[in-house]
Length: 351
Figure 1 (cartoon, rainbow, N blue to C red):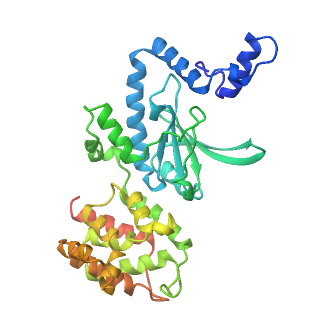
Figure 2: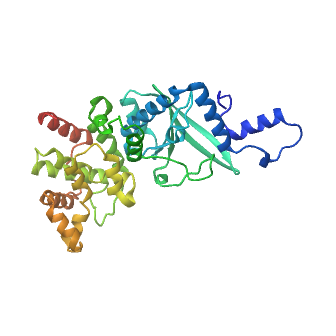
């Protein structure tokens, strides 16, 4: 297994038992997966020395870079790069959550990654499942395993420990890097333009799935969530044509509906994390709470907190536009046109 002639623990144990033993072997006589992993790590420390730790650090940094690019898909770092059990030839394993891989592969292509898509059938407990893997060839190899969006909170079990698998989202990986490598300034990585995808390119990928997100016709007679979002954007552009942050909030306030309709605000903010300002985040985060404020059903503490925000009036304006952007047959632009307008506004502002 250290030389990667075998990758499956069960197969390796069976072959080793056949070579070393005569007669039947009881499962209890065989080493556990955890014991095998520990011995492999001993080999790695012996043969690879300090280079193993240097590779681990660099692999974690590369994982963070890719996870930031793919933040819309709720990436979770797993495997040896997460736990620290890397060795020569280890790849970076990441779980990705999306329904369909077209947006994911387009984002990778746009950012210049070379990859292959593999669909692998696995039969376990007489049940057949097809797993989608994306193998990226880069400075370090990646294996992305794609799951449905609604499995983002599923507890996966480790084949080594039998316990919940160790994994990290973007924030948790940033905290791990800051703890293990204090000389690395994670926030400075954000400031390097080569480390960040064009946010408007990313927004253009987030918006189209809203066209398939149908809404309750009682509250949204205009139709799907994309049409609604573009209406709100056009109204916001008429009100605040110079205000990029406000216009972003108007365009993107409902992007989470295509990710997790049951909690679209949190899902949208997670997808947009690191790509929007605190003001835009505030407007999106509280646009549903503004309904309760208007209706007089918001608790006193939350009401006072909202009113104390310097962006309170903007929030209530967004609420008015959100209510108004529900007209069947209204004329709107395309997601690309909206993002182009914002991109040019960004350039005019010198950002």
